[in-house]
Image (tube, rainbow, N blue to C red; front, top):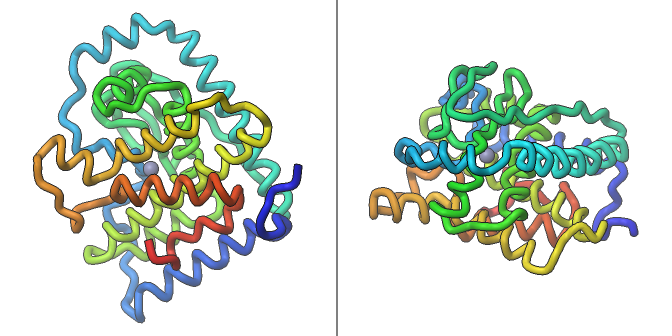
Length: 273
Ligand SMILES: [Zn+2]
């Protein structure tokens, strides 16, 4: 069944062009400073969380790594098939990447990572890093259980890979200043949420979803909203310090991608977010 909405042909290429132009426009003639706080590290929004509880490691051991690996592999395969199709339709080439599953700690192109880091995408080595204990954390600490909550996390990280391949990550990094870096970060993260929704749309059309799956995805998107995390960790909500967006914003952009199935609808850089 063809995807609804705008023609897919040329779409992704247009998306990239729109983003580049709009980021430039947002700067309003300022000299964009390169660098910023990005450093090639696109986290999932869990950095403010204190060190992971010791239990996480034990739970990871109880949870057979093989099962987790198979699940992550199956979801990754489907996500990458979708983006391969979308890129091809736009006359672009999708370059596959992989998820590095680890326990306790690891070191990659973006330096050391531990269970406390949360899932992230490293723009330097183009790989996704997920601690095996995170999925338990998602269920128990953030109250977002279910396999589709996990799939949403995976699809969000692949969203950052898509941004990297399209040059969006680089443009954001180059355009980031002390005063706009949080806003650009929120816009980047919400776009990754929207891209996750685009995959959810395709999974729905392929009859891969079970009843309740989308609700699990929405629940996970809301659970990792900056306001939710701030409210539970510090008790104070400070929008200016947000880097990933509120629960409402994250739900809305995930749904935007899910309902449209069209990455062109994920232009979080020009839209009012
Ligand atoms: Zn992210």
